[in-house]
Image (cartoon, rainbow, N blue to C red; front, top):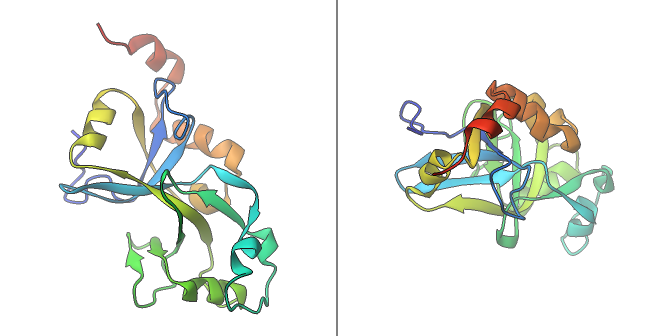
Length: 189
């Protein structure tokens, strides 16, 4: 059901439906970095942390800022390990320890990427998240079966350049599902 070739849903977006009754994931878009027999992992990409920017995170780090980090926001990546930082970024930037999701997107979690971003030599596109989202084996498939999520293709435009308030709507449009009909047809006996 959720299998797409041998990569499952890796590189896709999960778009929460209105049936998903969860404070963390209501009207959310999750970029799936890894999905396989062992489960799934990804990051919320439309839940910006309020009153907290990358410059706030960089204060305790040995980073001399050459670019304006206060203009870069932090995102709530998910409910797991909320203080652990990750950078979802364009794949032209690959360093040791970087996980390449596909030919467009990679994930890094070292302080070095934050330094490179601060010095203006980091990836061309990036989104910094605290925490992540994860599903144990079979859990995401059950949630898809229960209509909690729809699956959308994910472009770098959606990921890095779409206003956060519009990401859910744009991702929902990408699913090609008429939400009014979907809500009327879903339900459980």
